[in-house]
Structure formats: structure tokens, C-alpha cells
Image 1 (cartoon, rainbow, N blue to C red):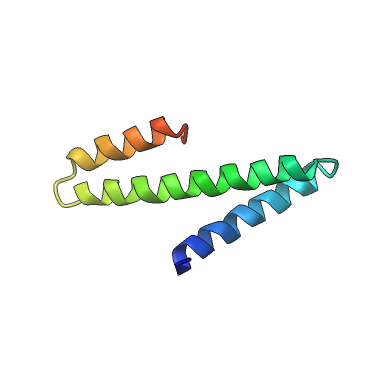
Image 2: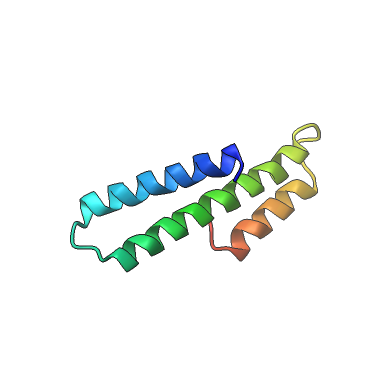
Length: 77
């Protein structure tokens, strides 16, 4: 696992711990799903961000379209 993936996973764990603080009766299965959903969301955002960066020199282009399509496909806002 590369360093960035490990950082994203740590962020997802932190999000899950906060969720558990808010909902202390959450089951382990629920916490696993929260963590997986957050980790997935972070990865999709990271990938979309790379696509958006492609357009920076021109301020517009296919990167925005691709980034938005990735986010829509995976239900990430």
C-alpha cells in the first residue's frame, strides 16, 4: 500500500471513530460499512481531483467532465 492510500485509510478510520462517538451503539458491521464508504469516497475524490488538475493550464477541458462523471458514478458529492 502506498503512502497516500495509507493516509486516506487513516482519514477513513478517523471518520469512523467520530461516527462511533456520535453513535456508540453502532454495530461492528455498521462501523465497517461507514469506514469502507468513507475510504471509497476519499479515493474517488482523490481521482477526480487528479482529473480536475489536468484542466488547470486551460481552465477547462475533459478533466472536469471525467472527474464529474467519476463522482456521479460512485455517488460522491
